Length: 350
View 1 (cartoon, rainbow, N blue to C red):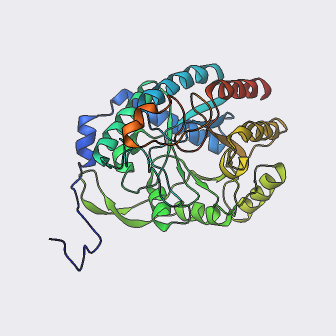
View 2 (spheres, one colour):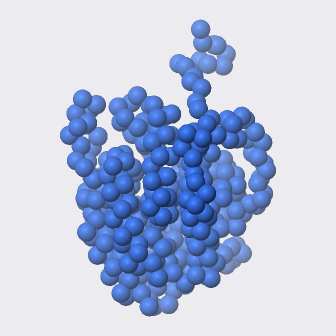
View 3 (cartoon, rainbow, N blue to C red):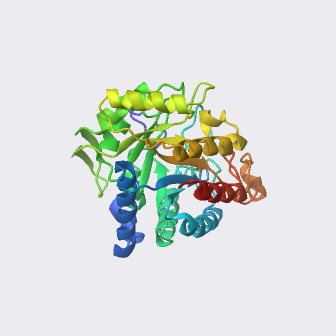
């Protein structure tokens, strides 16, 4: 019988497998772990200006079909070898989706896409998929949404984003201060960068906060602060913020706040006015800024899938009608356009 004082709106609670148990079932090998450490070091060196390459976080808006996701990863790995002296390609592997109201919350939360919410299954699928990406020797990026999930998959992630809706969250700033990889904070959905600047300052400092440890026990964590935070410009409120005057204004704000002058441009979301077909224009504009000598832009983000566009999630009895390699969340550009854009940028960038 529910506790009327504590559980007035709780229907049930299920004990979840601990991080240490899932890692024992799906272990990270020493060699694969060394690859992840190397990718993180390469991203850090790009952020520090020691490595003159740029990084591109590219891939599906969300992973809903691991087979299609793995096919995309193999294509990206082949492309990455062609451009590796100028670009570090990082696969976008997003398992959690923030919802403005309601909707599918991602592979970890609802892996069967039928509101059954088999989260333990989702954690297994997600970790297994990331191991496959790491074994391809391809770095992976994700958005940290639930503060517990990094305990299950964080050892396989090379770069993390904090989304526009959560950049202001103290919980996410504290979490970022303890994450082991570089973290990008997006500007808020209204286009303001103030919240992201505050987040960068906060995440760079030590914190104490509550969380779970590898055994699933509630613990108090003390962090050192994350020195590799950076801002992600994603536009907002119907306005872009990737043009040279926007970039210059952000550079000045970073300098004034005594923060490292480095940023990533998200070619989707507000910068493309939520029109996936405009990502190419944003990408080319930013690349031209780099060609013209800009050094503060260290990376870009692209939403890309095997096939362009998007599709709605059908009712559970019709899930077999989903089109292969097509996004079920934000619409994406297709692989052919993605490859053409990156190869063209490779030829253009000195």
